[in-house]
Amino acid sequence: MIEVSNISKQVSTAEGTLSILDKINLSLAAGESLAIVGPSGSGKSTLLGILAGLDLPTAGSVSLNGQDITAMDEEGRAAVRAGHVGFVFQSFHLLPGLSALENVALPLELQGDKDALKTAAYYLQRVGLEHRTTHYPRQLSGGEQQRVAVARAFACRPTILFADEPTGNLDTGTGEKINDLLFDLNKEEGTTLVLVTHEYNLAARCGQRLVLAAGRQVEESAIKKQPAAKKKAVINAAVANPKVQGSKY
Ligand SMILES: Nc1ncnc2c1ncn2[C@@H]1O[C@H](COP(=O)(O)OP(=O)(O)O)[C@@H](O)[C@H]1O
Ligand SMILES: [Mg+2]
Image 1 (cartoon, rainbow, N blue to C red):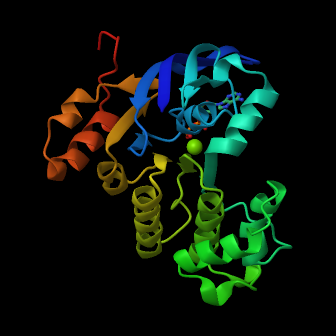
Image 2 (spheres, rainbow, N blue to C red; image 1 turned 90 degrees about the horizontal axis):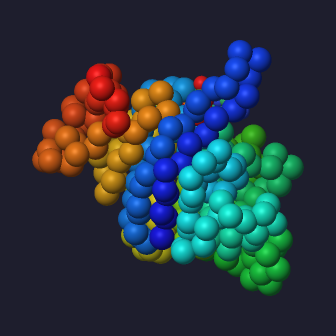
């Protein structure tokens, strides 16, 4: 489903070449969940953008559903994104001039779905917002806005959902409800879930974790061997004191 082979990302800056990601590998089967964790600036968002076909690596390849998106042109990647990929962002990214229902329906309408409003209403109900369909984003709380964003992402029935710190702007209780919703929909719809998160509780709920430290993949085997209850502590320790793959320290 998602196969990542040796991807690296470098960018040119005034100070010279900056390495943001260094030889990342991963393999995720359909319907599984992956958490990308690591401190701020470790390359999580850059990696997510590359996996979703929004950005290109400098080296290495990414294939989604057996299609090598790194070998495609922008038009090809756009087609793969439209057919397979959904997004949820930390800052919701709703259109302020559209109601909750219209926000969810818009991408469906753009795909030519004649039942866009009906499907949108179903997914708003699914996230518990059937009583907020005519509200505009400014009339909704942060948690409600993120629920609209989750409904919008799932309404397009993506095979893979990418979420970049989806609960980063929410209080803990509200965030928990969003997380529950992401995992419920992941199960119900068989959607593959790739999350960037700072929350170790959330990372521990995912089937797989990819721990980044300064753009490098931290050894995960130490985490896998632990029972669920210990994973949080082990991930914390790995991030605080990274034993980086392929390095001597
Ligand atoms: N286009 C870019 N040009 C220069 N530096 C960048 C660019 N994109 C990201 N970076 C840098 O790369 C590092 C990783 O960024 P990012 O992927 O956003 O990290 P994270 O999401 O883990 O906080 C940061 O130090 C960031 O400033
Ligand atoms: Mg980020």
